[in-house]
Structure formats: structure tokens, C-alpha cells
Image (cartoon, one colour):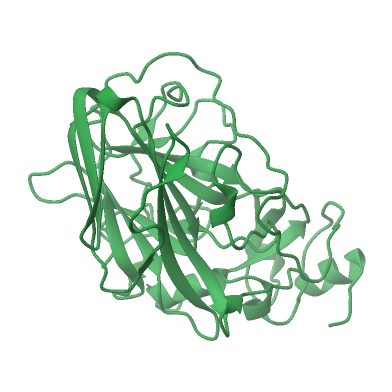
Length: 356
């Protein structure tokens, strides 16, 4: 592919002037790269969960996102009993089961094209810095079952970190297809694309790591009236489960139980990694490709889960390059594919209603 200079790239993509693009035609960072640390600045314990929760709205028309906001200080690092690490193509959407607290469906994209995604799960105990054996690596399929039970949780339902002054953990860095970032209305979601689905309970969701690269959403023809700057976006999403004294949590993945209790002082790190592969090898993307969205990144695959009903399809287009490593403090050997400039990441559906 012919390498484009900055001026030609922006002109062909229909973009106004942006920052310097410093990148090669194809980049994937190998595991073990230097990481950028996300630091919590607070020292207080987890406060009681808020009760003024937004209602889940499933109707058509303009909507307000229903992510219940957590605006307290972020709980101190190391006080969580489970840390879920989500990386790879997936969808997030709140769901309210009858007579039960609000949960968040974490659905893993499994209907690609030549780019197919393979979901692998790793579980590590942080106290002794080791992976749990057996089973080690779990490879999940579309019919896999993932369940979480939490006894005496600190949070009465799922919450989403919305700091009063934005920071690198702000959940709003996750692209939300139903917010005014993109469509601003409830979208008709197709079933069977995000499979399997993990109903996450009693957890605080947040951005675990944002991209160094920055992005815009736009239509394929570069119509300047339909461009919106997004800045950096979430590449890794985290969800922490906190337990009260005497509490216990059990994660079951395809019949394999993983248990942690508050008394142990331990933390389970659970990695859900849904990576793109092509012919059995990690996919390579070309962030500067101006003609083929399928080679630029895999964001376009989210549209397999949406019935646009005549609405424009938006593409994710990089405006400034930047490459970082995995989040600090995690087990880097699990991360097979990293690319800030073509993020393979979660997309949210803030209108609620769940995934199917």
C-alpha cells in the first residue's frame, strides 16, 4: 500500500486539520511493551451504592444513556475481590431482570468475516501471582456459559464510573453507539452476534486503558457535516467486584468454578480476551487505509449487530497516531494483540434493554 502523507490522508478522509500522524502502515505491539499506568488518587473505602438509578428505557426516539453513574471517588486499588479485564471486540448493554438488580450484559462478538474473533479466558490469583490450574486457558464458543454469583457485595447493582472531572478511568471513554457520540437514539439490535453473553453483577465498570491515538466518527464519504471528534477512546475496559466483610463471589465458566472471599484478601484477575485472527494469526490493520474500512480496524463489525433502518453507517477514523502498551500491573503474557491505532475494543449501547 502506498504510504500517504498527512495532508493527503486528511484530504481523502474528508477531515479538517488534525495533529501530526506518526505511525507506520501496520502496527501491532507485542506483549511486554512499556505500559502506561492508570492511577487512582483516592484512599477512601467503597461507599454505599447510590439509589437514584436511571430507568432502563427500551423505546424508540431520542434517549438518555442509562449507565447508572458512580460519581464518588474511585475505590483504592487492591480493595477489589475480582477485577475483570475486557479486551477485544465486544458489546456492553444494561439489562434489568425481573425482580433482580440491574446487570450489564458483556457480549463477545463472534460473527466476523475474514476477521474472526476467538474468546479466551484466563484467571489469575493476584496474592501469589499465579494462574489458576487447571484449567489455565479456557477457549469459549458461542454457546459457552458464564455466570457470576456474589454474596454480600459492596455494590447493590452495576455502576459506571463517571468522575465529576474526567480522568483516564472515565467510563464515558467507551464508545456508546446510542449516545450523541453516534446516533442518540435506541438502535434495533440483532440477536446472535454478541455471543456468548456474560451478565455481570454488582460491579463497577470503568476504562482500564484509553488509546494514545485519537479518532473521529464519520461516514464513508467524509461528509464534513457528519464528522464528530471523539478524541481518545477506551481500548481496555475494566469491571471490579467489591465484597463486604464475610462476602464471597463465584465465577463459573463452562462448568469451571473460580471462588474468592473477602477474608482471603486475594483478588481474582479474570481476562476476557476476544481477539481477531485471520488464517490462525493475529490480524494486522492499516490505520491509514483511506479506501477500505475492513483493513483500517475492525470497528465496522459492530454493525453486524445493528439494524440501522436507513441511518448512516459511521466509521472510526484515526486523526492522530499514538502507540502504548497494556495496562500496568497486569499479566502481559496474555495479551497477544495490541494496537492503539486500530483498537479492538468494547462498544456500548446506552439505551439499555440488554443483548441477545
